[in-house]
Amino acid sequence: MYRDPVESLEPLHHRQAAIRTLRVGMIGIGTVGSGTFRVLARNRADIAARAGRSIELVMVAARDLERAASIVGESVALTADAMQVATHPDVDVVVEVAGGTGPARDWVLAAIAHGKHVVTANKALLAVHGAEIFAAAREKGVIVAYEGAVAVSIPIIKALREGLAANRIEWVAGIINGTTNFILSKMRDEGLDFAAALAQAQALGYAEADPSFDIEGIDAAHKLTLLAANAFGMPLRFADAQVEGITALQGVDVACAEQLGHRIKLLGVARRQATGVELRVQPVLVPATHLMAQVNGSMNAVMVKSDAAGLTMYYGAGAGSEQTASAVIADLVDVARLDGVNAAQHVPHLGVHAHATNALAVVPRAAVHTSHYLRVPVHAVNQIQAIAANLAEWKVPVRQVALAAERPGMGPQVLVLTGPVEQGTLDLAVHALRARAEVAGAVTTLRVESLEG
Ligand code: HSE
Image 1 (cartoon, rainbow, N blue to C red):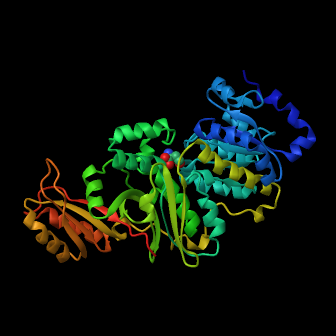
Image 2: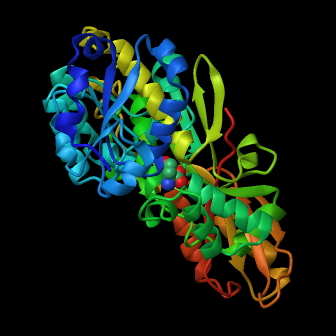
Image 3: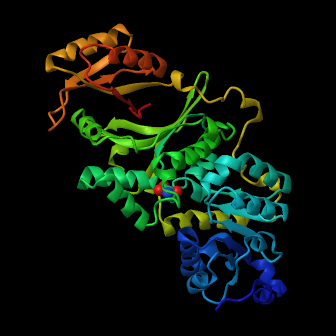
């Protein structure tokens, strides 16, 4: 059984309780919501000590009320109407963990309009509608906190906005999707096929409701959009990000990368250039000895290169119920401490610099400057030098050439690692290469990231 919100909230009208307790209304009680409920209950005293007041879940909106009641018991009021939570006078802060970008936008904007703070782990919502949501929140003087939206357990938003506040950030790069990192690790370490690895990630609660967001790189791009806005003070530019997932990645390239001393990871990269910011998600080669290559399973890691602190790196769970709850509750603690404080004292939502808007445009794909890996199918093994010479003719610096280890059913393959070159130049060279008589099929290219200085 569950209780109706109106009657259930009666006890909270005792004035003292209402003043002292931060009253939380939660929309959604799925993976993240149930984890948040559990951790709030389990660590109640510690959380209250850190927040300076108790934090209490008073109302939950859920589609399936019986299921919700089986999770939260009878002490929490339940409703099927999320808007009721967003606008209820007895809710101080709305935790939106339902996901999606349609109704969630309406709930969050309604909560803000009613003067409520918002905590959300919804990266899609913020990447797409963040500009509108943060503007509304600024207007109302309320907080929209979203640590759980990016690399769940890692306090990377706090690190960028507070810990690294002194720095000019040069780049941010990270493994910021747990599902794809889990899939890549399972495929490499256990020889699992893609579909089986994805099914495991779904069963463990790592994947999005629509897992194509994970495997197509969209979820990572949502997070990268938020990281870049915090790092560079640029507006949220999700629509301009270059996004590539892992669905087109072939097992042969995973093996060839290893042969060349590298490992393939789905990386989000935001890098400052003279003309703007590179904003891109794609599978890339990283040196096998690099710390980033050791990040396996559903773990995430983010590296930040900044002028004063230098290179810093942050590591932690990238998906999971209580792992995300950890960040959601940390945001609630911030809200508990800042609620009632002059809004000018709040940490800004993004730190967007109004004057920097044009300078921080997204660099077009053709101008992205990195090293590359090429796999070129050839008719005969002695054609290796001809391939290298042809690339050099097109002004592509060739750093390493090798023949791929033989694989059953596959002809000879020339592997190339290039030095840094603009994507536009590489594209022209690959186009020319494809027309050569020595080349026996499509040329595969992937970026290589050294992740150094
Ligand atoms: N589906 C997401 C991931 C969940 O796998 O990273 C955490 O944002």
